[in-house]
Image (cartoon, rainbow, N blue to C red):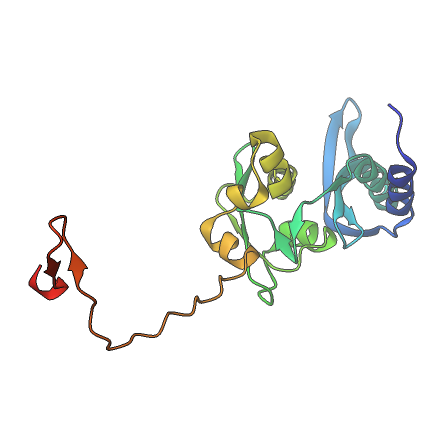
Length: 214
């Protein structure tokens, strides 16, 4: 599939953005073998450019630094872009993965990121500044983060919905959003009311008839 020069320039800029990483959890696991237990470490890492791209990765190795390095490499393969409206998301959604349920709700500017644990890391590194998040299921960190990623990936922009339905953007927006997008109509000046008496009207017979008597 060929790309235009503008698309290639956008892709180049996205690749050159500095990606920041945040370790959410490191866990020690054990594998039982014939000679005893073999210990290793797992790392759950979130990376993002704090603008609109974020990725989640999971790595496992005998040493912690190597496990984090593997998790970062895995997260780079899973990068995706978050649809945003200003400093928040475009609409409310519930992300699901396994027994995890994470509700994501848009918030007004200045609210901040109301979330905890790894969900906050995903939202902050994804560039979302104002949002309300609530866990409705299990508190397992891996499932919670995957549920958050599922919800963010299923977000849609108004332009995409309008194109799919064959409508305009203003027609698919909620009533409150329409009032924000469309300016209020200007008031129409009313004609001045005068106290002049009504002129008599003529009937079919040619007789004058006053409106007050009708």
